[in-house]
Length: 281
Image 1: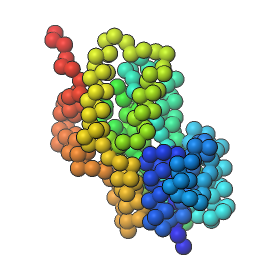
Image 2: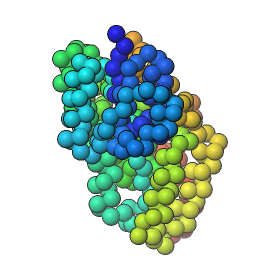
Image 3: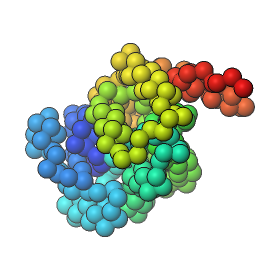
């Protein structure tokens, strides 16, 4: 019997590619998204895919979707927590309600879906919970304060959950990409430009330098959504999946900086390398 795989946030990018490659790997894929009217690209790539509405911000929506999938298929073998969005802004310029929204989507959304599927996986004595994290969940990025806070929370949640549910037959994995050339970054930039609050003067030059350096990083080291999705499929199908999957050698090198320097000074210097030099005092 084909494994039943449910994926969140599938209208574009990594979620869409994950649906396609899981289907190629022999899974019965249930694609979910907040607004199913945005499913045209997904349906073009995976004709006939099963599509359901699921808003990770709404506990009721999550529970209805999970219950409907269980009623139709009788089980859920793989869940891919992919839904999320970035946020760029200086701490001083970021309204608290924006922070709460970023945490709700990127962290509590993962919590809601994971909490909803755990009873079924526990009863089955088997399951895979795979969450798309980020290098920003391991190393803080300038002006990504709210987004990195959410991804750090996801990392702590999954690292705490993993050893417990492993004893119940459920494997937990984190997939941690760096730059990925999808609509994700364009959406973050558009959001920044649409906000009523401008970047305040003390941060304008630093923000401009950071954005320029980030664009170069995406141009030279950015992966495709399919490359990341192939890692997700590995985590979904391996006999003994790893807990953590860094998706490129470049990101492994960056993250190694954190692990070899307990003081954290090297990470601060590395993250700050995309910014102008500090003003002399």
